[in-house]
Image 1: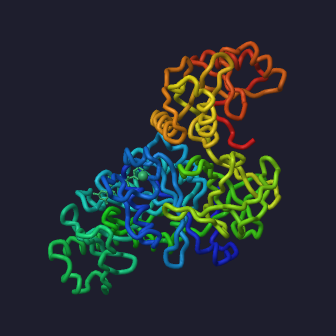
Image 2: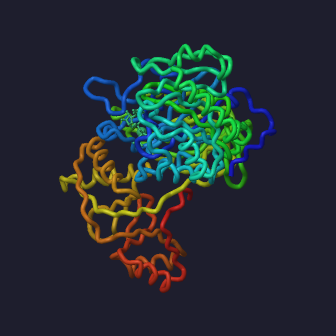
Image 3: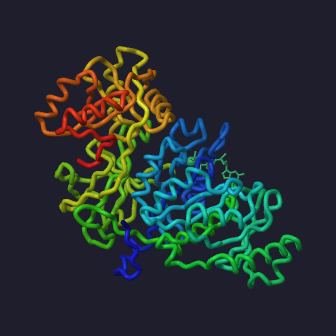
Length: 535
Ligand SMILES: Nc1nc2c(ncn2[C@@H]2O[C@H](COP(=O)(O)OP(=O)(O)OP(=O)(O)O)[C@@H](O)[C@H]2O)c(=O)[nH]1
Ligand SMILES: [Mg+2]
């Protein structure tokens, strides 16, 4: 578990200014839109793109895959780094759809905090709840952004109560909405006593911010109509009585979440949220690893791979490992030890993810997320160190729940298909099994949409149309045991045996009965539904 001890030694300034966090929520709450506005305020881009961009309109930077752009949903986590005031933000936009949650869960092992986005009309939705529980398990501090306040939203107290009750966390308002729906004017910034007014005319424009001297300042009446002002005063009075005050330590411990209200698409409330992440968000935290935890202030460099993405740039066929730096000050060209293979690796062309561009990373500090282009040596869960045999632990691997056969439209292209599938398997986008008997491959995923992503990417990135067909199997189990027992098991069950992309033995079946039988008949063989990420 992470340890947020407040009195650990001071971090070097470069590390202390880093804020590494994921944006999480139920599908469609506005994560990608919010990410885009973060980039805008961070000065990383000049103009925000849109999730459902039509014609010549700009697209968002984090939904860079074609399928994401066509459908207006995120299917893959993407990282971005930028400066905001004195802070360096490393942000990961995650997909909300549960079919892609393995990617999101892995991302949560690589960040120090999460921004939870809630749709103001919908409140806490099912996926919000699941993701929140993962954050809770890791004691991640959470900042909440209640989005889409430009539309009809639920009552503010009701939303806050729902979060407190459903998620069992204290909620403290950092801002308070004034009016709602068409009448939504903006927010009262409780932390800094300012009036923030939304500009509906220009979505890319910074909100008008007016300094006031507390809620009784007569100046407010110049901007807020009498009825709304009266309600605001009443609400704030009630909030003061009923809701907890911001306790920064409780936020860092994950027991309290501050909530900001806003509208990502109108760029509203975003800057206040960013200030909040800077001020109340955690510095890079210790990373749990075996046999010991890694402290961000250690002088030796270490980091671990939490995601691999092939063909990020369609122009260069390459594979990028997303590495979260866990400690030290990395400089380009350093030789690090790849702990799994015990081999040295010279990191000569690491990249930083800057909005849509990648740029050579000359250096990186604990907390940063960098990309390391490679030819498949780097896998999810791998640790890089200056020699010590440390392994970062706790990166989840989900059991495949849906199996389908896959074939190339053109049977002559089977070899090509194999290559593409192996790449995606190494990326963690799907599990791929090659049966011992017969031709073709079986693909295993967690959610049905992953099949579609796979088909679309194989066609786009490898120029291979493919089709899926129902498989006679519905479950996959990794088999392990002593060599001799395993060989005997394989030889007598050939019809059910396949190998994954690492050559490991996988038993396929459609009957739980088979699995029970194997466990009974082969006491030396262990069947498991997931495969450990680390060898
Ligand atoms: N009215 C309104 N619509 C918004 C706002 N923010 C985002 N949207 C719209 O909500 C839809 C979903 O936004 P996204 O940013 O793609 O949501 P997401 O959370 O990234 O979705 P997934 O990645 O698919 O889970 C888009 O059509 C946005 O334009 C807002 O503040 N107000
Ligand atoms: Mg998205």
